[in-house]
Image 1 (cartoon, rainbow, N blue to C red):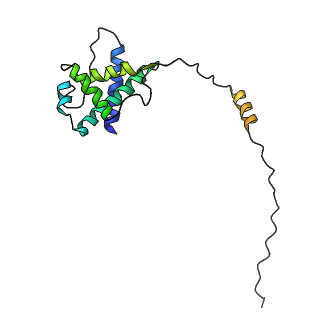
Image 2 (cartoon, rainbow, N blue to C red; image 1 turned 120 degrees about the horizontal axis):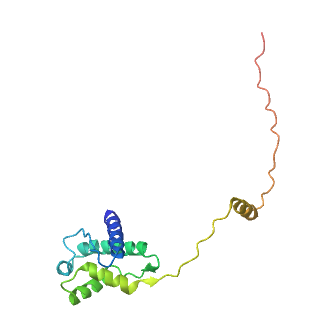
Length: 160
């Protein structure tokens, strides 16, 4: 869980720093041995290590989605597990001097979709809210009430 949260925060930082300006240096924080494709390739067959990279990429994509609400990678579109590893293997084979981060950004570019802007819902006034609640309320059945009967008097001891 901590790895996922770290990835989410780092991913948001990467995306946010990338949108600040074209000339600005982008600092990518990578918590593993290396982000280099050579390192990724070294861990072929080691799914435990590759899964850590996958979690980082999930955070990166989440950060992208947070920073770019109009250009989202939809839920379920990002390949997972072995399917993701194959994508990154292909990227690294084509770009051996690059990094896994480059492969992740390529996937983001391929998978993201433009989301149409939606009109925010108006916040009802207090009067509208009260009126709306009154019309939505279900009818209440009358409650039958009974007057409690007096409890019988406790027996008393005979007087002497």
